[in-house]
Length: 154
Image 1 (cartoon, rainbow, N blue to C red):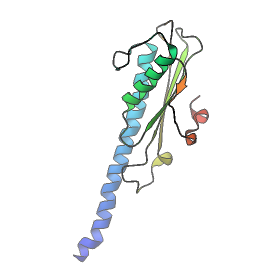
Image 2 (cartoon, rainbow, N blue to C red; image 1 turned 180 degrees about the vertical axis):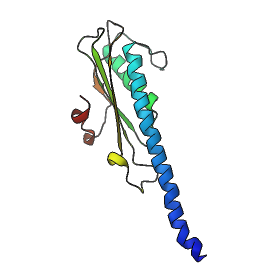
Image 3 (spheres, rainbow, N blue to C red; image 1 turned 120 degrees about the horizontal axis):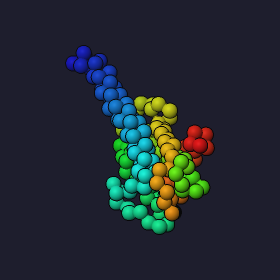
């Protein structure tokens, strides 16, 4: 019983650490992959993989792209916040910037997460298909102030 009492707390912390950091790394990979895939779909104007269809309104397409990034990231550890910086004119070779942050506090909240729990990813791609409406710039409503988009998503 004494040995069990001495070993069990260490074993539980090890298991909790494996769970928390394993899910954090999974979310980090999903965030990078999701941002890249959503940006790729946007620059070729292929929204077939989402529930929202392309519309003639640029603002609605921006909302669609934000939803698409959130769906592609599918983070487990926390909410996803997205920022889209569209080119002024939607034309080939113009850059589209898509950034995402997952505020991941860990499943248990017992261990400190790297980078304050923020998983960041961005993708900059050139527009390939000219579309009359394009995608408008936008940010997920309600994004916390500590994300500080200007410092890394530019």
